[in-house]
Length: 421
Image (cartoon, rainbow, N blue to C red; front, side, top):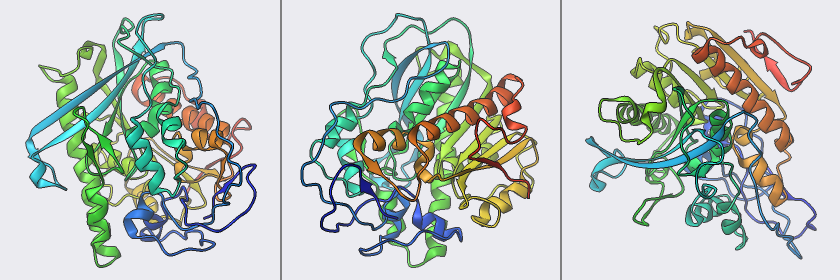
C-alpha cells in the first residue's frame, strides 16, 4: 500500500508506512495489497501497521499549526484520569526480568460541566515519535504536533452524578492506547466510563510515570518465529494475555478496594469491551475467560485465539471490519467465529476502509496531509461510522435501548454492509 502527502510534489521513493495490518491479514489468509516498491517488512513491522510503499519527498513541507480530535456528540462533559497498576500475581510475559505485569490505563468518564482543570494531553511526545518513526514518518515537527493533539477531556473533573456502564478498550498490536482516545471520549460523552489500557512491551512505546519508555518486545518475539504458524501462536498469546490484563483491571476497578478514586461511578453489572485489531480479538478472549464482560466488539481484528466452540454464553458480539478484507471468505477466522457466536451478533464491513479506519489515525493523518489510497474513506466518515455503530451496539447490549441502526442497511451509512453468511 502506498501513502502520499497532499499538496507535496513527487520526489524520490522512500520506504514508508501503510496503515494496514498486512502481515496479520496474510496470516489469516486475506489478500493484502501489493506495495509499489521497497523491501518486504518484517512480520512484526507489518503487524504494527507498516508495509513498504512510496512517499513523495516534500520540497517545501507545509506543517499544520495544531491538530485536534473531533468533538464528541453526547450530552456529558468528559473527565480523564490515568492509573498505573501492578499485578503482583503475574510476571510480565514478554520481559520476565521486568518483574510483575504492569498496566497504564486511561479512564474517561461523564463529568460535571465546567469542572476540571486543563485539557487532558493526547500522548507523550516520545510515544508519538516512536509510533511515527515505525511508520517511516520522520518529519521532526510531527511528534510534538501529534502529542499535542487537542482532546475534549479535562483532568481533575468531578464525575457526573449516577452510575454508568463500563467499557474496556484495547488498542491494536504495536499501537499506543492514545489512538483510541476519540472513541473513548465519544462513549464517555454518551454516559459510559471507559478504561483504555496500554499493554507493556506490546506497543512501539509506552512511557511510564517515572519517564522510562518500554518498547515492543512482543514484536521482537513475533519476528523471531520461523514461520506463520509459530507467529500465529505468539499472537494468540498476545490475545489471551490481554484477557488476563483486563480481568486484573476489572478486579481493580470493581473489587472491594478499587484503585480508582471515582470507582463509585461504575455500574459493575454492565460491562462491555471493544478493541482495535488484535485488541478486538482480545475482546472475545476476555469474554471467554471472564463472565463479567457482557458484550464485545472486534474492530477489524483477526481471531488468533479462536472463539470457543461452546460460544460466549449467549452474550452479544459485534464484528466491524474492512470490506472486502473482513467480508465472508476473507479473514477465515471471522467465518469460523461467526458460526460459534451464540448470542445477538452482527457482522458489518465498511467499504473503502482500512485497518486504522476505526482509530484516531484518519483524523490525525488527514490533518497532517497524509493520503492512503488503499483506504479512501474520509476521516469524517470513518469517525461517524465507528462512533455510531459501536455506541448503538453498547446502548442495546448494556442499556437495553432500541438500536435500529443494527437492524439493517441505512441510507445514512451507505458504506456499511450487513453480512449474512
